[in-house]
Image (cartoon, rainbow, N blue to C red; front, side):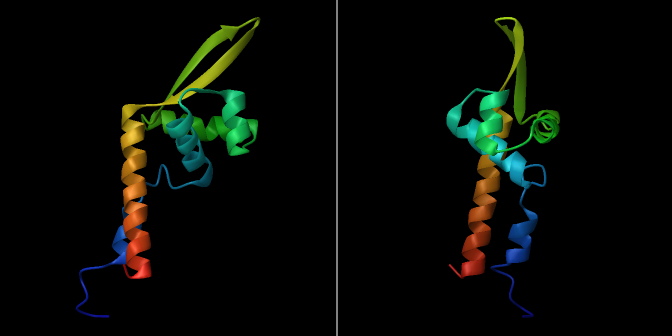
Length: 109
C-alpha cells in the first residue's frame, strides 16, 4: 500500500516498550499498578509465575526503574515486597496508549 502514511500498525507495534512487552513483566506491572504494594507470594499468585520466573522478571523491571523492591523481616522470615515506581506507572500508561493505538489501527478505527 504505497502512499499510505497516516495509519501504520507496524509503527504502532514498534512503540511497545520491549521491557514491558513480555507476559510476566506485563502481569507484574499490571498487578502492582492496580493493587499497590504486593509481597513476593501475593505477586506470584496473581501472575501465576514460578519463583525463579518472578525473580528474573522483577529484577529486569527493577533494573529499568519500573519497580522498587523492599526486603523486611516478617516474624523470623525475610519478606520481599514490590511496588511500581512513578517511572514504571508512566511506562505502563505509555505502553497501554501504544497498544490502544495499535488496536485502533489494526481494526481500522
